[in-house]
Amino acid sequence: MTNTKDKPAAAAIKDLLSHSPDGLREVVRVVMQEMLEAEMTDALQAEKGERTASRLGYRSGYYSRTLVTRVGKLELRVPQDRAGRFSTELFERYQRSEQALVATLAEMYVQGVSTRKVKAITEELCSHSFSASAISSINKRLDDSLAQFAARRLEEPFPYLILDARYEKVREGGIVASQAVLIAVGIDWDGRRQILGVEMANRESQSSWRTFLLGLRERGLSGVELVVADDHAGLRAAIREVLTEAAFQRCYVHFLRNALDHLPGKADDDCLQELRWLYDRRSVEEARRVSAWIAKWESRYPRLVAWAEETIEETFTFYRLPRQHHKHLKSTNMLERLNEEIRRRTYVVRIFPNAASCCRLVRALAVETHENWLEAHRYLNMEDLKEHKKDQLREAA
Image 1 (cartoon, one colour):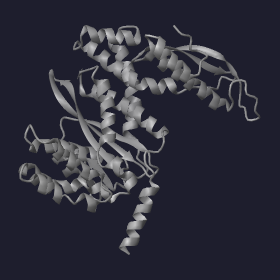
Image 2 (image 1 turned 45 degrees about the vertical axis):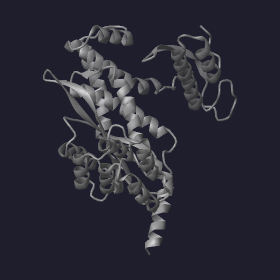
Image 3 (image 1 turned 180 degrees about the vertical axis):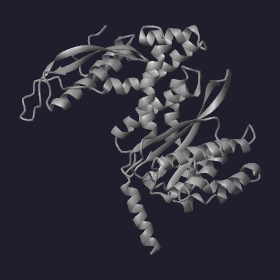
Image 4 (image 1 turned 135 degrees about the vertical axis):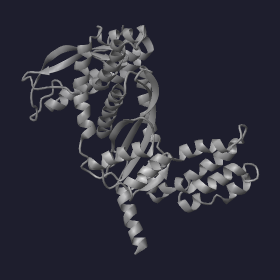
């Protein structure tokens, strides 16, 4: 295999992808090795061999560490400093969701609801089989940290709130049924995304969504000006009851999907495409000029046109926001991408042995995503919203 230890990450990745059959695993290894080196440089305030007055210490070789991932076991060289102060958080953060996945698979195996494939996966990931006590220990460590995340205080206001639910198959009392995973994402005044809550519910109902939103309020959720969500009757009712001051933006992507229910099987594609174009206008006044679309399609698709006229207005709420925020808040797509990542991980399990196991894995993934979002560039420039609100006040004066 090509030696990549001393190559820059970009060159090593290109080389590995072109020559190595295990390229993906090696790409991950190279990138994570570079992250460890960068962490050490940041801790010492100096590159390897660099002489500066601000240097805080000196490197002192490496020790080996194996990291288990979904692409295989990675053999990494962890840098050390002479004073022994350097400590990396890379392994703990990366493996939190890995531990949740392993714990779920292992729990299935011990409870007798797994297959030989599950046994093979757990043994490959951790190099040994699991006892009930080992699983209990893994779960306790995870559950303690995840409970702290789920119960943390929400100290700052979140002007934007995005809500959605997905379904996972869970075995309860010997019966396999779909259970809802309720998820809330907030955007704070710094323009950063945060995962505010992840909870399980037997189904999406007004009661379950109300309990979920009240839980967020009790933890300190405040300042919500806009809620973006699908048009679910129970969710809409819960929003009206708990977040009384917030405007509602019906996800336009879900709206267009719902439109298919009002069209025959062999409908003209141009009809929905022209409807979609209304969400790319510069202002709500332009978007509301739907008369041409109505005149063109009313005789051909009267059921669709009547439904759209009655419900389309609530998909235009995002036009109240600054134009720079439109594409991010006219749909729940941002949360849908998180759901796709959850789906990719939970697909391995297929059927969870209980609701706690499902919640454990999804919350672990949520924590991983939450931390990545906080460290990433700002999702939105909230100065745009502040200036937009000032302009509205001046116009109203």
